[in-house]
Structure formats: C-alpha cells, structure tokens
Length: 355
Image 1 (tube, rainbow, N blue to C red):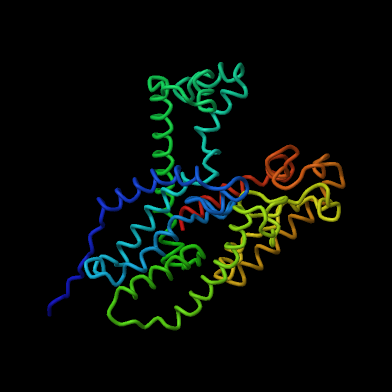
Image 2 (image 1 turned 90 degrees about the horizontal axis):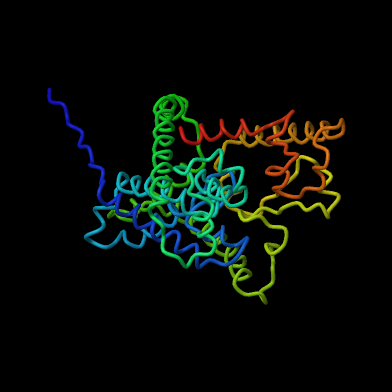
C-alpha cells in the first residue's frame, strides 16, 4: 500500500526579506507626512492601539493583495504560506514603525543623555548611548552624521533586539503547542487576520464560495471607512466638525484621556482612558464571551481596589493627574505599591508572543 507524500510549500525567504526591508524604509518616511498629535498614530504603519499590539501594516498589505488575486502571473503566488510569511514580515517590522518606537530602550537612553547629562555620564557607557553633544545633534540636525560615535550603540541595540527576539521565540516554542494545538486558545488578532488571508486565497481561486463571508466583511469595511474618514477629515481640515471629539483630551492611540477638569470622572482613581478607537471593540467581538466577562470583572475589581487604597492614604495626589499620567507619572497605579500592576503587563507580553 502506497503512502501519499505531502508536498511542503517552500518559504519565500528572499521576497519576505525584501518586503520587510522596503517596509522598514517606507515606514519612517510615511510617519513624517502624517498630521500632528494625536492623529499621527491612527495612520502610521505601526501600532494603532496602546497595549493591544494591533499593527496596521499586516492589514494594509493583505488588503492590497486582494485586487492582485485575478492577475494571471500572481494568482498562483497568493497561497496561505506566502500570505502568512507576508503577515509575519509586516508584523515584525511594524513594531519599529509606529509612534511608540520612542520608548524602545535605545531611544530612551539617548534622551536620558540629553535630559540628565551629568548623571548619565557616570552610569551609561558610550557603547549604549553616544556622548551628550552627539545626542543633541538628533534634535538640531543639519550636521554630518558622526558614524564613529554611533556604530557601537547601533550595533549594541541591534544585538539586544536579536537576543530578546530569540528569547521570546524560545518561549513561543515552549508554549505554542499546548496553547494553540491542544487548548486552542482563541486569539482575536489571529482570527481576524486568518479570515482576511482566507478571503485573499479564495479570490485567487477559480471558484468563489465566499459570498456569505464577503457581505459582513464589506459592511465592516464601510463602517470603518466612514468612521475613520470623519476622523481623518477633522485631522487635515480645521473647518471640518470634530464629530467624535478627537481634537480634545485624546491620546495618540485614540483614547479619551480623562482630564482632571471633569470631577465626575476624574474622581474615579482607576479610570484613566476611555477608548474611541473602534478597532478595539471590533476585536472584542471575536473574543469569547467568557473572556470579555473576565476582563470586565477584574477591571471592576481593580477600580474598587484602587479607590479603597486611595481613601486609606495611598496614591495621594493622583486625582490631579489626568489620562495616561495615572500610569506613567507618580503616583502610579501600575508602578507604585501596593498594586504595582506592571508585572501583569509583562505576563501579557509573554502570552501575546507565544500565541
């Protein structure tokens, strides 16, 4: 009895690498032409949301693939494996293309060189950040790049990223089988992008059997374009009405930053941001109801605990902070005891990487 051999499709390493390199070059230039805060975060090629790790590049790339599905020479190239490689390349590259890239370790060290020149001179070596006068050239510009001063820091932070990526990849290999193949943990980001890959591959086929899928997809596209169209017009044209209130008290990722000037909201210690980014709510629909309930339940517990701790003397002065200030400034519910919830985010990052 013969055993059929399963044909394994080769990974297009060359084209995947070329695509990632082009995206890495185009992304920073794209950022330079975007409107000012807070709108630049909504139309960049990197992260669109805060702590949700929703990147725009994979979606844009896969949406642009759809019109190419009927071009003869390209039809056979639109396969699940090729599209998955395109997704991985754009996903990895896009983490360096958004406005959040300022908080990467290297850039923080460069900023510290400028802000805390005397202090960092003793504790930050030059192979992690150039001297203060060199770092200040980033702000002013207009001078030749002193590559001799920059080669060591650039090389160090490149190695740092590679080592961290290798570490996270090892965690992925340990946890992926149990979480994905055995427990089949639902992951909204992957569910949505997998549906888009299915649509692209079906469009490239000879028989279209996706009418039932396309109708909700097109309706969702229309709603998204309508919403973001009004936001974009408000960003570029001051005369256009600010329908969703993006011009006031809005963080870069699209959340309503609760100001201290609204006592009814500011008095809730655990309330910092309320999202106006509808993409987050769309992803939430793909999560199981039990997961959504779990998130809401523990958030209510967090809000109650924060309020009690404030009333018994902790986090004094936090009501004067608005929005993200309750996270990044002191006193902070995420970095200062007794809550110090930043460790939870570290666990979430490990889970995101593994899934």
